[in-house]
Amino acid sequence: MSLIHTLARLEAVQTGRAQALATVRHRHLAARPLVFVPLTTAGEAGAPLGALVGTERERPRLLVVPQPRDRDLRSAFLAELAEEVLPYVDSFADETEAAERSETDPETGKRVKVEVELSADAPQLIVPSRAGLEFVRLLGRSMRFRRTAEQDPDTAYPAPPRVPLLGRWLTHFGERARVPGSALLMAATELLSRHWATGQSSLEDQHLGALLAWIDPPEGDSGAEAALRAELARDAEGQLLCPPAGPATDPAFDNQLLGPAIERYDRARGALSAAEDGLAADRHLAELTTAEREIRALVESRTRPAWDAVWRALDLLHTLPEGERAAERWTRDRWSYTGHLDRVLAGEPPQPRIDDAVTAANKLSARETAQARLEAQEALDDPLVMAGRRLAGEAFAGEVTEVVMAYSESKRPSPRPLVTLRTDDRPHLGERVKVFRSLEGKPQSAEFTGYDEEGGVVLRLLDKMGRGKEPEPGSVPDKGARITWTVFEHAPRGGPSLPEPEETPWTHGGPPGDAAERPDPVTAEDVL
Image (cartoon, rainbow, N blue to C red):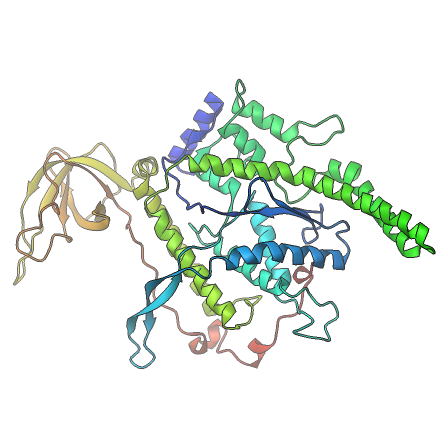
């Protein structure tokens, strides 16, 4: 946690209201996101109880599993979920734009530019909390290996037709959510916590109602009072007025309402199957319908507050202007969506349960690079974030007091002007350390050469001044200009490329063989 974040939390405690951590929104928000509020039975993470899902704020679709232990009812739930999610995902596939991508020429082995089709937009899933992200990943893992009756007529429990495809997409969204800065799948609590600091712990921030209470408390209440009421207030029946975003349920709800309702449903279903005449069957069918409606009402009563809270969170986030470089990260998400869509259309198999050594290392390297890039871009987009980096000694701002023209010592001298800045910051600078500033959206680098007699920082500009003997206009700062320099790179690059899987040494898994072609054993986590 940065010093700025710590100070903001302390101020939130003192003022009773959340404090801003950013002046811009650092994540892209789609014009038509798909909000997904799942609910599971307590103690059984893999047993869905219901969900609210949809793109329209006033018209969510309620999905319910009256008996979570019933495999057929769970399959029906997943089929209904696929009916809602997959058309939304597919709706972004048709509109494309031309884009260039670097690929390796198989003949020459060199990197060449290839023109491809890139989706003009991409789907975006929003869940209430971090636990919702984990549930999406769990759903994807449990569905993508299921076999349909068309794929395998002899399978014991065939999945509905589009369930495996939904599993592949949810797995992709879940994996993409682990990439820092990605916006394909996001949690409302994570978005709010990134832009506002509350006076409670990060664990308490996972309660969406309490988090919103700190950011936008009711008139006359402090954030702490409103958050406490959101966490603990109950109605006359002992039920939470603001159920947590889940997906697990509250024990009081399970014991007092849900458990008895499911028992009534089971009794009615058992009686219906044992009915000996049509009159009795009609009576028990009415009882079963009533019991099912009761469970649906209970599920909606637990998910609707979280549904409304997610949309309220999106409203708050829309009050912030989008950061300049958030669009670049969204373009990477569009590439990710387009790539997975191409793999699905090409008939490639689902994602493996366990990545091979090279794939795992590439993922880790890509995420580390994305994290460094995200931290740099957020600081460049947001002066409040940059202030935190300045306090940490990773950046400094100052006024130019002197510019002395100098040239490199080479056959063709190039301009290397010396710029002196007066700053009150204390950056971590050492001999020949490189620093960077943003010049027309591109990083210009300089080298630290030392301090002058008055303590000013002396920098030697190294690039972005043109190819002539004299620097291009605007490439050298004028005297009196105030500039922010960073010790960190603006566009961090990844490490060296890794070998192809077939060239992996045996010490790191060895070349794929027959063992790699055999599927992994099925575990309890793979089947809901």
